[in-house]
View 1 (spheres, rainbow, N blue to C red):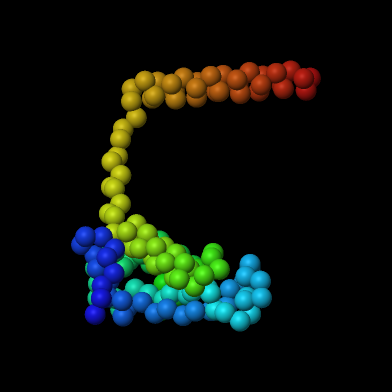
View 2 (cartoon, helix red, strand yellow):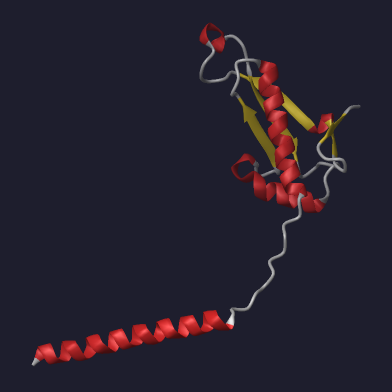
Length: 144
């Protein structure tokens, strides 16, 4: 039973990842309809024993459209003409996604506006108010 090393703390069992080779679109010449060079890997996030619940939730959010309703991440790789290169590309993309999900997002630190920014804001509002007031009086004089 071999494990895939994602980070020093996260190891995923190879049995959790399903690989399927499919026909690829794009370049390939005569082989395009004969050889299944593209790879589609499926990783069942919901039933994975290798990931914590926190990482699973973040991975589902990061995955977006690549996640099925059942919580399965599907990655298709068809960039290369060789099956092994596409397989490596798909695994690399899976590792990148899991590493992103493993990073805890930084909490936002609330800040207060500075005294100078408050003064600038009020000054801008005052100038705008004066401008609008001057337009109001100009329009009334035109009506007469």
